[in-house]
Each structure stands twice: as C-alpha cells, then as structure tokens.
Image (cartoon, rainbow, N blue to C red; front, side, top):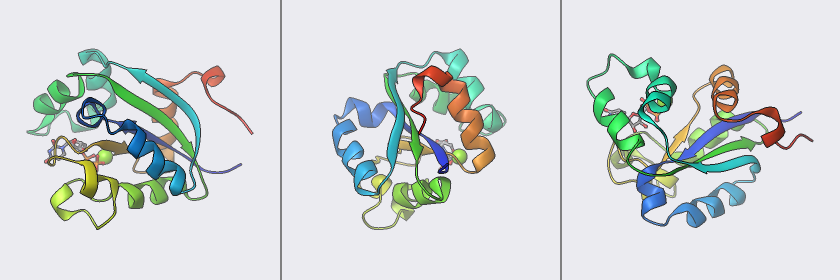
Length: 140
Ligand code: UDP
Ligand code: MG
C-alpha cells in the first residue's frame, strides 16, 4: 500500500478561486486523491487540529484565519507522500518557497499560505483520521 499524507487547501486559496489550479498541481505531481471534502472549520475543530501550536504567538491569528471561510481537506496517496507533498508545496513562508511550488505561486504570506501538509507519517495518519471516516476514503 502506498504512503499517504493529509493536505488542506486553506481559506485564502479557496476564496481566491485557486482550488482547481491546486488540484492540477496535485495531479501533475502524481498524487492520487483518495479523500476530499469542502468544509468550514469551527474554532473548536481548528484549535484541535493546530493544538501543537497553541503556545505560539501566531496561534490566535491562525485560528481566526482557518475559520474565516471554507477549506478543502484532502487525503493524498503516493510513494513517499509526506516528503513529496512538502516538496510540492514549498516552505511555510512563501518568500522562502522554491520556484514552481504551490506556496510560491499561490500563497499571500506566512499565515495565508494556501495549503497545509503533514510533517510525518504518524501525523499524516492522525490528521486523515481527524477529518475522514474510513468510508470517505478510497482504498486500493
Ligand atoms: N504560521 C503563521 N505564522 C508563522 C508560522 C506559521 O501564521 O510564523 C501558520 C501558517 O499558516 C502555517 C501554520 O501556521 O502553515 C502551521 O505552521 P507550521 O510551522 O506547522 O508550518 P507548515 O507545517 O504549515 O509549513
Ligand atoms: Mg506544520
């Protein structure tokens, strides 16, 4: 079975109409989309999802941003999915993101940075399970 990662097309990118363009990047990078849904995060959901950052100075602003509009949550499958997706999205701060990465091309700033990507296989599994039940995921 291939590796999986969890991605979000964040409210800034959904609001600007970039969902289709980001789907193109996902498919061009050879990921299989095995789960997808549009949802509007509540503060409770956003705080739980980003709980690892709760002591950070940017936490409250991040929660405000993530609850500001709809997001597209995605489960992606590919060999070495976590690292491959991090390479496809680029650095957290778009000013530091490499050429042709999603954040370089679609992010506004370090907060409104268009997409999320898991940072480890363990977190990918947890994050997929946080947003999807088994019947919402393709299995192959
Ligand atoms: N973030 C922010 N200010 C910062 C660092 C991060 O607003 O100085 C936001 C940004 O949206 C980022 C998220 O918090 O994507 C999670 O931060 P993390 O360091 O985990 O970056 P990521 O894994 O998303 O690249
Ligand atoms: Mg992170």
